[in-house]
Length: 404
Ligand SMILES: *[C@@H]1O[C@H](CO)[C@@H](O)[C@H](O)[C@H]1NC(C)=O
Ligand SMILES: *[C@@H]1O[C@H](CO)[C@@H](O)[C@H](O)[C@H]1NC(C)=O
Ligand SMILES: *[C@@H]1O[C@H](CO)[C@@H](O)[C@H](O)[C@H]1NC(C)=O
Ligand SMILES: *[C@@H]1O[C@H](CO)[C@@H](O)[C@H](O)[C@H]1NC(C)=O
Ligand SMILES: *[C@@H]1O[C@H](CO)[C@@H](O)[C@H](O)[C@H]1NC(C)=O
Image (cartoon, rainbow, N blue to C red; front, side, top):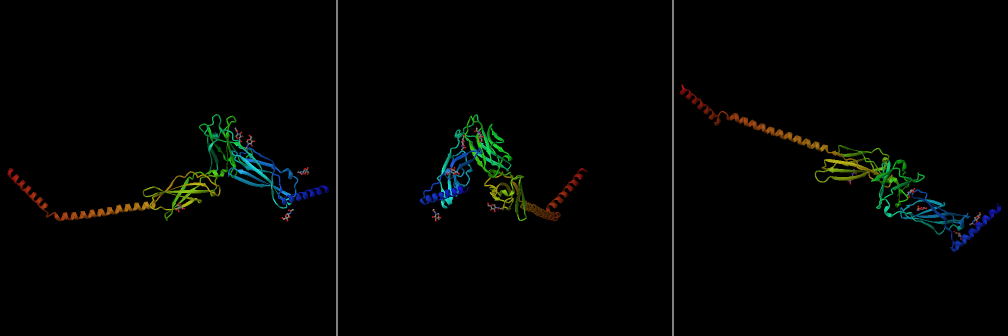
């Protein structure tokens, strides 16, 4: 017992004198980690990197040992640096690209008199397993997470059409033990061109990894790998009802109801498009983005009808990005107030003008009547009539006299 303690003490002392000497001469060398390995657990992206401490430092006790790990992050095109005391690390890689990892040993403590010593790097490079012709890789891959209820990912077949082989989609996220095949393929002309994921198969705020490869090992198609954060692909449902309400000060209140969906209200922003049908010319468009579920619009000048439609999108509080929903139907408001005023004015005008006309007509008639009454006894016409009456009477008399 005592013996072994003494031995340890001398070993540490020896080491200290060793290190201090090399620090003085600036010729200290620390060995890099050994037995570096990179394992693929089949999760379509995450790789398990592991290593062991350098054999020369296994009995070191007075110094702390750490590791400096760097890996090339192909998603960001730069090296990511990690410092850890563990001898393993898990990182996400794009398996269509080269995997590059480098690790060094860091030593610091009493044995180095407080200075941090760093070993040279041990580097490991894994080439991607790119089998199959380049042109057979799927193109135009994209996903839409509808109303946070289900997700559809679609692709176009590569330039080199698959003949005896179909594409297969595999996916994995952190809640799954193993990668699984697409639960429901979408077909177009008998070829698989998409996959529909039900809610149970999805996981937000974590890497959702997808691999599209060939369905048979005989005909090899180039595999494609994708990694998404599915909360960034949400497309909300279209808004169904938009209410318009005019206030007495000629402002229009635009309000809308959310369709029954699982996206929390505070996670959405809205765009309201207003279209004015002005007096002649092009309709006027105006767009406003708001977090509220209501918008007050100044009533328009000269516009008779104002129409509104609304769409929604994930707000950056809840996701980095997303898709706009489809537009709601147009909801229109006619300026009935001014219509009524114009209508009233027209009716009143007609009534007034009719009144004036009839008054004028009555006056004319009165005048004419009065003149007629005045003229009757003395008018030359009257006299002529009287005279002709006398004449005819006289001739009648003569005739009767002749006949007798
Ligand atoms: C250790 O460091 C201290 C100051 O940091 C210095 O005074 C001392 O000489 C160093 N010892 C050796 C052995 O280098
Ligand atoms: C470390 O110590 C063990 C005994 O505890 C010994 O067998 C081994 O050789 C030592 N390793 C080195 C590198 O000194
Ligand atoms: C490539 O495939 C081989 C076996 O076919 C596997 O051991 C290796 O890990 C794969 N490389 C990557 C980067 O997945
Ligand atoms: C396609 O990828 C999955 C998941 O990695 C794998 O299990 C399957 O064997 C692959 N298919 C072919 C034909 O390589
Ligand atoms: C809507 O946006 C326009 C500019 O595009 C702005 O003049 C108007 O005040 C906004 N309306 C509301 C209600 O925010």
